[in-house]
Image (tube, rainbow, N blue to C red):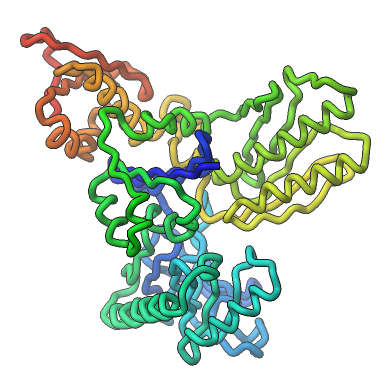
Length: 491
């Protein structure tokens, strides 16, 4: 199935999407105001050591202290865990965020640094060689370990990624030298840094995704931002890679033109329709995510047991897609429809496991409980996409959510581009006063107004009584417009 990638930048946020056919399979958002700091390196100070937890807490310039587990502190291989907690209050330490803060929990940090490349992961001062768990062939694993031994620096470690299978030895050596150079520059920066300073920032979502996905499997890479396009173009070395890169300059917003925005918006719904007429219900709590499978309108063409089995198989495929797409992490419990045959139950688990193998995040299936519930875990790196796309509702004082300011502005931009694509020279937007203030203060449309819209006029009419999510956009080609006194010409 044809795979495409889409990258864009708006209002300080980075958007990234992956499709297979016309279906969205991955969506990532790096928000300017969000807390995804995984991979970043900071200078920190130990503020508390808790022997009973075999952990320390580190202040490193973030609102919440980082959790440093004893197993993430450099020590000899034979040193028992109880002796690895060799830091004390007041010690200055260099830490890397291994897990971003989520909800009320602070970040998890490690003193064992790692630098991720396209083909391998470089582990300074950690003499360990490993191979990606996704490579299961023992002969291939043994070959990659022998290659790793040839390209590593003495005393350092490497983990060979799936891309390393097709990489030339020369390329691998260059990558190790480059990552080692990054580490050495980090050491120099650390010497002059103050506690709380950011020493090294990991790549943004566009580069991370290109780093993690096999580009040979991708048909086209569409980029809606010239800045991001130039950054990716510089990263690509080979002509066959650069030929996949497309700078999108269509009249409509890229995510809207390719049908992605509608699919992104559907991520906010708790109900997911299946093609058969059956549906899923997602219910997220603080501790876990529960998914309920319902037959809905699906009746099948055979006996009840077969109908239920077919529905559950369809649900397993969609559940694997949805947890990846929504970035669901932690414990997931699925209430499949009850089946009588043990053979069907076993095949269902096999199908779910097969589908979850497509996920780059680690997933572990725990099996079927006595109540017929299937549970699995999915490694959580950051907040799920619903959290990233919404905020606490200002009307019900936090018991619900509304769309985030940036996402509302993004939807307004889509409507404006469609308005101008329909031949209008002027656009009049009526919107919530608070959202209007955010658009002005963050200059969300400044790039478009000075670029593609430089010969257009955008008038905004703020309303204090409008719901934050409500807005209207209408076009007008008259040379003289009749507008209220509150109307403002954008920029």
